[in-house]
Length: 180
Image 1 (cartoon, rainbow, N blue to C red):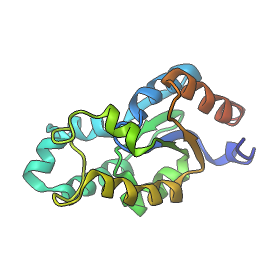
Image 2 (tube, rainbow, N blue to C red):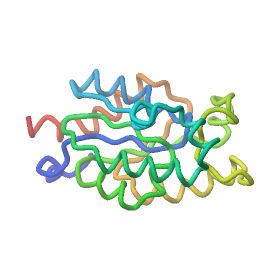
Image 3 (tube, rainbow, N blue to C red):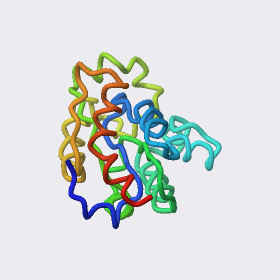
């Protein structure tokens, strides 16, 4: 359970985690269950830039994609939303400070083995990583960052999306509904 003082300062719920963790899918279910709006920052980037994440990576590289992601996240000005971030959002202290000021940040923790089972299109999915970096190295690097920013961590292995959304909803619902 999160402290009741969050009601005064947190108006959104932000999901962080690796690609394949279920941020977008669980985010939609959560938004529906809690009566909130939904934003997927990857979709926002693609819509605003009129390119897929993979096209941005192919033409400009992973650091450019991370800079674009920071810019789009820092421009968010919403309340009563579930925000599903790209997996690399945690590389930006500025973006995470912005999200942290307006959101309860939830880390969807999924094991490397489970993510490798879920993701089939590593080469075309638009994952912001250095060319020489393996997915396992990226996973290890990001776990530290996800834990740094998470206010609530939810273990996802062996649980379905409806169950996870319900568990997150139970944890945050009393807080989110006290300010409406």
